[in-house]
Image 1 (spheres, one colour):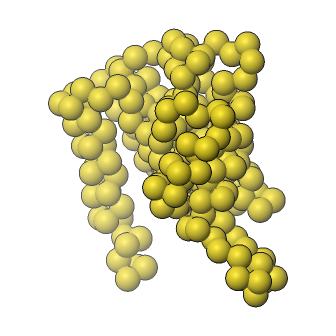
Image 2 (cartoon, rainbow, N blue to C red):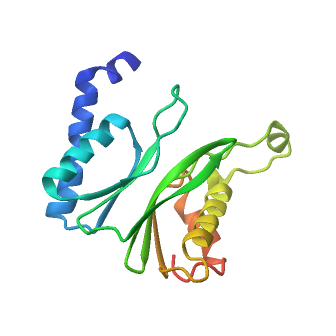
Image 3 (tube, rainbow, N blue to C red):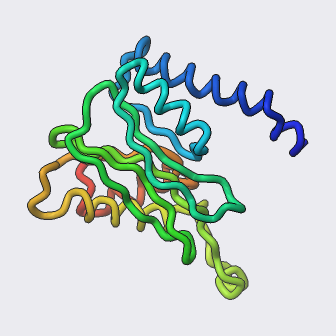
Length: 184
């Protein structure tokens, strides 16, 4: 199965499907932004080429530095130019994972891919629930808010999307109790 999924034909088909979906979202469905996670450097290259052809504005976070793992690149794609670009660093144990962030007017848009929560053996023995990563996702969300909507920020709206590796209903419930979130 791994050999089949790693074949050039499967990879090329997958890349073309991604490009097709991005083109459809922007041209046909008229979405304002597309947020992608788990982008490889090969897909990044193809998206850059497509952005030149179709006039897209793209911003990619830096890739995972561990050559034994996937690139784990996140990106934001839009037909509208970005006023500012940035990255948000999320630590996965001791390894950083980066989220692409862009500002369009008063809105920061962040493409997230929250790492899976890892409990220690002691926590597991104690019966600490993982809540499907909700604790880590909530903490990450709060850190993103404090970074991009800090006092004196040029933005007052934050849009986060992507893979939080948790039940979004639990995440929503957690966030509605936080003072930083007026709308979830």
